[in-house]
Amino acid sequence: MSPSRPLTLPDALPALRRARLVKPPISGYWIERERPVGWKVLERTEVLGGAIELIADPTGLRHRYQLLPWEHSIDRSTGALLAKAVAKVRSEPPSSMSETEAELRAHVLSVLRSMALPMAIEDEFTDAVMRNTLGLGVLDVILRDPRVEDVFVDAPCQQTRVYLTLNQSGPGHVFGRCETNVIVSEGEMGALVGRLKYRSGRPFSRSTPVLETDLGDSRVRATALCPPLSPDGLALALRRRSDLPWTLLRLAEHGAMDEVAAGLLSFLIDGRASILVCGARGSGKSSLLSALLFEFPLDQRVLVIEDTREVPVGALQALGFKVQSMLVGPAQGKDGAGSAEEALRVSLRLGESAIVMGEVRGKEAITLYEGMRTGKAGSSVLGTIHGDGAREVHDRVVNELGIPEASFASTDVIVTMGLIRPGGGLGQVRRVTEVAEVVRTPDGLQFLPMLSYDGRYHLSERFMPLIARIASGWGMGYEEGLANLHRRIELRRVLLDMGREDPSYLSPASILAANEYLWQGNGGSAADFISYMGER
Image (tube, rainbow, N blue to C red):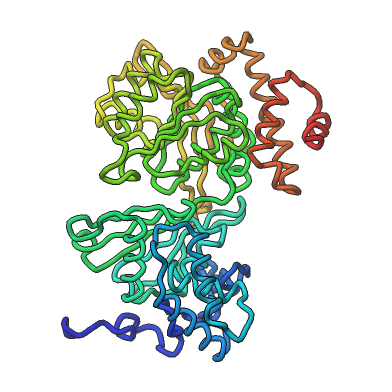
């Protein structure tokens, strides 16, 4: 093929028959409507803007996310009206793309009303106009599926299918990344990234080939790449945050832990332990970090430092938690508030508070550990860091970030999030694989498991110094501390059982109520606890 000839879809996708791909004139997205021969439907669902099927090949090893957008299924007359409406909105754009989603929608509705369309403007029609003029087209439909966490469009976009990451809907439901039946045209990709650039107000060019911005209500984080960093053209990654705040029990319901792990982590947070959550990219570190915050007492002040909004600050504040958010780094653009190091220095002067670092990775680590060593960092410190286990985290912090080992010893616990492939199959699940305490010995630091995982979770039977320290701070002996821990585990088992019938028992409000039940000194039966929760 001559390099000067424009790439055509048949060139790009020789394995597909052109007739199987459809694209209405208003859309820049090609859809393969037909399911591959022999593939079976596993699940069907509908969201505003389209119908979704999750299908599997005859082996059951490969899955595909099959989308049929509303605009791909309408009759010819409705399609003609839709094309007319889309053209009208494109000819009368809003005054600013930086307006809120509600303001943009109001603008679209005003344009549609001025057209005097010979049909009632229904939600699907308005939504299709909105998505295909000011939004992300069919990608908006995908992002409405609560199972979707990430959406990827690799370069060259017209040669690759959109693919995505699905979260696990339960311990027996394993889905990882799977391809879709969606292909983004080059023209649409250019227009889409252009809208992102315009709405963010940030530079995006060959000299600044990365664009990061939040979309809408900050539920979606977009990262776009362009040449020369992406030599084959524009690329896009979308990360969707959960609609519901994560709690330890919601993570347990998704198979990331069980009641034993949830009870132990609750105990450690209540005991003001300093915790690093480590793991590979995509292992669920940020979700676990967010879930841990709902285990604090309401009177605990929390300072959150992050460069990307991931901690559910609004949900915490709505429950009465005292949380101050500090957004730093790339999220603020070139003229932003400053570095994580600067924000951390400020936080150390703001009085007694728990400090939450979205990610520990640079110069701020020195400031953080100095604050922990001298006691200026408040009652506890939480953060995430890349690493596969306690020893790797230690090597990275001490050897790469230059933190003295004596300072690193201020870390109480390292929690490892792992990506497990059950049975050695292709699917992956996120799972807490270890909770290790950092213990000083005459021979140096040791990392002793408090909780291990081998298909099941096991609490250590050895004496655990951290539990003894926390118990002492509560005026308890070691055995009383263990009893408190086991009580937490039992209550979380009860909540998980109740949550199977009513998911609200896995919510932040229920977690807070269960902890208050403990703090009140209640030691009744499971039936008493169920009655207590039912009365709230």
